[in-house]
Length: 206
Ligand SMILES: C[S@@+](CC[C@H](N)C(=O)[O-])C[C@H]1O[C@@H](n2cnc3c(N)ncnc32)[C@H](O)[C@@H]1O
View 1 (cartoon, rainbow, N blue to C red):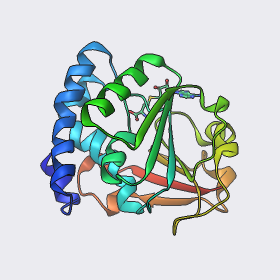
View 2 (cartoon, rainbow, N blue to C red):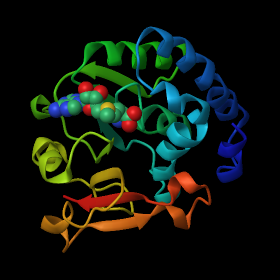
View 3 (cartoon, rainbow, N blue to C red):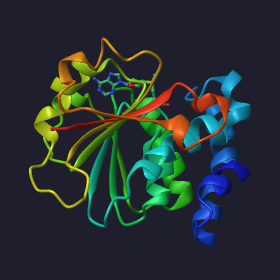
View 4 (cartoon, rainbow, N blue to C red):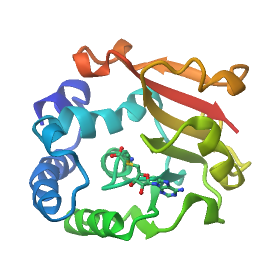
């Protein structure tokens, strides 16, 4: 939990309390339904919570923004971001029902009123959102056609509407089709821990 305060020192008491509750809640759910790899769990705050929150270092969302988290698994990056931005509406979806059961369990225990979760495939979603966020679901050229229809034209934020994707490793081939408009932010510029050395936030305006 200290690592969250290191990079987000201005959290409210309520937010700190909610972040503290995340680890025991996920430990309990993960013993029933595997949403976080067991070998990673000791680094829960760094690899899952802080990695999700890195989107909040990259940009701030204004109130009433609507964000869709596609392939959220157990709620990443959506749940940590919903704590960070309590005035923003988060819709978390996954094609697997038992993962959504974990998301609803965690969001319910924390009383997060700005989170809705649903079992659905991204390709079937009809609603519009300001941003689609995601981590570790599929390659961008497969992902973008799933959700292109879901990006609203109305812009509320300084950042243009579109996809915000957390990615690691060599992306040169994957981002080629979008090279004229994609923005690649290196997370090692924000975080000193080794985990972030190869991690990036991709912002693709759509
Ligand atoms: C590797 S997990 C990542 C989970 C989470 N984003 C994280 O970073 O911890 C990928 C998730 O994407 C979901 N998924 C894959 N294809 C999907 C689709 N077309 N629509 C919705 N969810 C999908 C899977 O069910 C799985 O839970």
